[in-house]
Image (tube, rainbow, N blue to C red; front, side):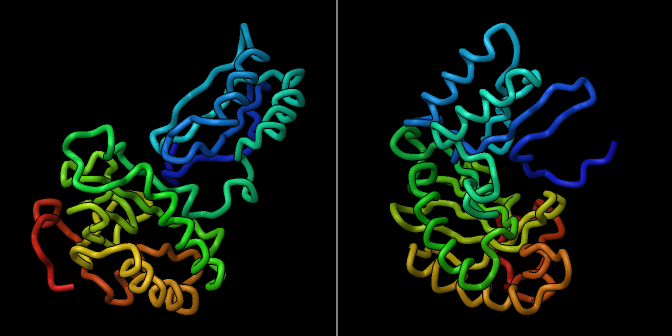
Length: 239
C-alpha cells in the first residue's frame, strides 16, 4: 500500500466489509455547539456498533456504520449541520488547517492559535475565492510559540507566535510532508499576512502547473529557497 496524501477523507466511503464511514470537519479538533449535540445523537444511534476516530489532522471519522443506519446518520449530520461535504467544509484551506491549543490554555504560548486561525483562514478564503482557489487544498498551520505543537514547520503556510497578534510566517513546505518550510517574513500581523499572501495567491492561480501544490510553486517561483536539511530550519535564510 502506498500513501499518496496526508489529508483526511470527507464524506461517505464504503469498505470491503460493507460498512460505511463518514469523514467530518471539526475545525481545529474542537467539538462544540451543534456539532457536539449531533455527534452525541449519532453515538446514541450507533450504540452497540460504530466508532468515532480522531485523525492526526484534528478531524473526526464516524466509522463502521451498517447500511441500515446510514440514512439516519446522514439525517443527523444534516440536522446538526456537521460539515462533511466539499460545500459544507467551505474550502481546501479550511479542510487542511491545524493549530495548537495556545492561549488561554497553554502557559507557554506567546500568541493565539486555535481560537484565532479560523478567523485568519476566513479572511484568506475571500482572497482564495477571488483567485479561483477556494477548493484548492493548501496546508496552513499555526502554533502559539516555538515549541511548535501545531507542527507549522510541516505546512505549506506556517505561523509561529512571537507576541500577541504577531507571527513569523513560513512558506514552501511540501503538501505531503516531505519538505520543511522556510522562514519568509518575521513579526507580521494579520493585515500584513493578508497583504503578503494576496499577490502570491494571485500568481499561483495563473502560474501553477497542473496539480502543482502551493508549497511546490512557492519553491519553483523562487519565493523562498527549499529547506533541504532540518538542522537549518532555525537559521535565517536568504529568501
